[in-house]
Image (cartoon, rainbow, N blue to C red; front, side, top):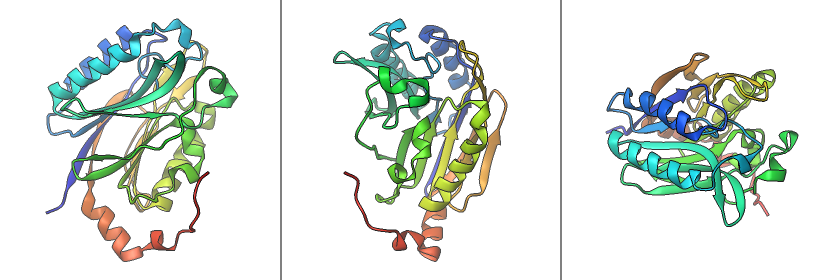
Length: 257
C-alpha cells in the first residue's frame, strides 16, 4: 500500500519583529487547515520576519514559540515546521524546529548564513544536517540561503523530501524557482519551498512562489497569493522513479569536511 504524506504550505505576510501578532495570525490559518494534513510548513523566521536585530526579540520568545508549536501540532495531529530567532547559550541562531504531534522536536540551525544581509555577523551558523523520519518519509529540512549550495543538500541518505523555508526577496525570485526545481531533479526527491509574501520593515518585497516539485521536477502546487495550499506526496512515486532511473547510483563519491 502506498504511503502518502499530506502537506500544507502556509504562504503569509509577517508582522515585523512581533512574535505575538504572528502567532495569533498563524493560529487562525492553522485552525482552518483540514484534519487530514500530516505536515504544516511555515516560512523562515515566521515570528519576526528576516530581522538582523535579534536583540530586539525577547530571549524567551524562542522557547515560548516552541511551546506554541507543540500545542498546535497536538491540536491538529500534524507536525509543524518553520524557523525562528532562537537565543541559546549567549548566541542567536536562525533555528528550524520540526515539531511532531507527540511533542517530539528536532532542530536544525541554518548552515549558510546570508552574508549579503550580515546574517553571519549576528547569527551563529549550524554545522549539522537534519533528517527526520516521519510517517514513513525521510525529510531533510533546510533554510533559505542553503538552497544555493547543492553539496549541502546532496542526497546521500536516500531522503524522500527536501524542504526549504524562506524569506526570499523578489529581485532574486527566478533563482528560487530554478534552484528548487534543480534540487528535486538532481536528488530524485520531492522538493518543497515555502516563502513569505508582503513587504518587510526594511523595504524588501517577497512574492511568494511557494511550490512543491516531484522527483522529476513537475510542480504539483505553486502559488503567489497569501493562502494555504496543500499537496499529497507519494512514497511510491519516489520508489518508482528511483527504481526505474537509478541516477542516484551514479553520483560522485566524496565527503564534506
